[in-house]
Image (cartoon, rainbow, N blue to C red; front, side):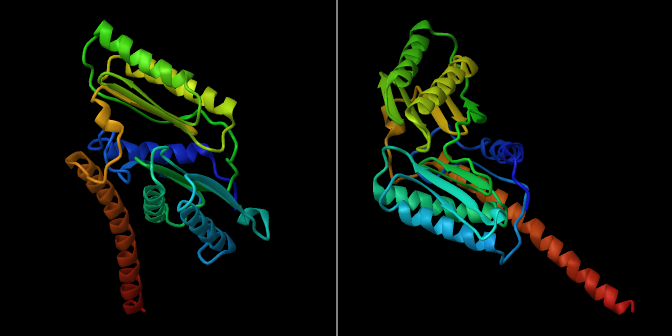
Length: 286
């Protein structure tokens, strides 16, 4: 089993994000709304030691989320190709029950989205889950995974100064999870828990710098790097508070995710059906 590459994972990210971002809002009240996901191209053999280790890893992630907002695991195998690495990260303001629910939902969706692949990652509004057969734990990675900017509201000096002040506050604030705001401008930033304090600061500084330069005068912006993210909105303070209700845009995003999964399942069924027809007609021709 060869090592997975970050490029293949990012290519899949681009494909799924491009579909979901047609309907997904920048931010959502629902913690389990789909943001992005991707899978490596490499597959593992069914009923192999790697599959057993992967199942153990994902079970450990779900169980751990009932008492901790972040954790990582390495499941060792009898040979190097059977080793699997994984982690999860909940948004810093989630309660433990909400964290556990989000991680369980992410693992469930990841099992469908990345069936039988050696690596996969899924970002929901409230949590992030990733596994791979190549170690990524403790490795700083500032690759842009998702950039999304809202429509331009036109250049307003006061509004832009306020936005920049909020983002600047996030950059200066310590900790892995940071929230700030002033007036209608609200911002949030977070690092994955396997980064050191210095690496977290470096990653968030990069995300915030890119967010300001790339999103310009947009009324909201999201910048997800591989190990951290920064987001802002001019929609008011209610946007970043957690809620158990889902709005129409959240429902649209979940519908889009369901369509993606439905298309994948349809292709698989078509392949099985064509294989069946070949066997039937091949047998009749003998």
